Image (cartoon, rainbow, N blue to C red; front, side, top):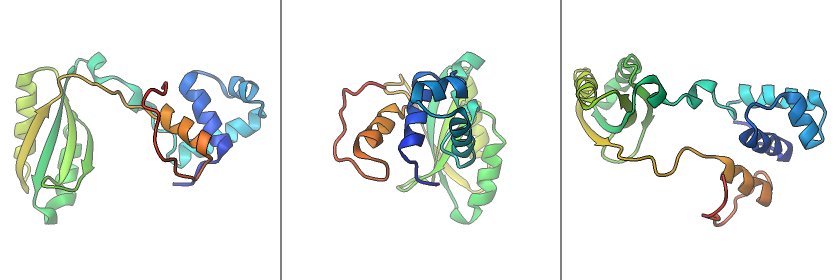
Length: 171
């Protein structure tokens, strides 16, 4: 991924505060030309700095209020096939290859405990899956956030590391 400069960070910060703002509104707010903002937005989206809109949709609003994290233990040589089979299960909304005792960490949503049990059964039925340990999310304590990271980069300068975060910083 391409390193972000101060202008990119300012645009992202403005979008975090006003996600529905048009390129014209952002340009006015930031003192930039509309063409600059539009070109930067296209580049930020194409290089993966702006994630797809789909990631803003709350699964609970779709009828899937139950969130769990499943640590999946697999036979490594079958990892590619296992990932493809996991991708076919709609309730798995995110999965990461991880270090530690498990190989894959999946975020799974369901409409009930019974449905979560069914999904776990689907996971365990995949050839090469040896075990799945499930933890039910009781409450989301810190929602996904990046605004504090953007502000930290703006304060320290793009491309530099900042020691220490302000835990009370607003998002």
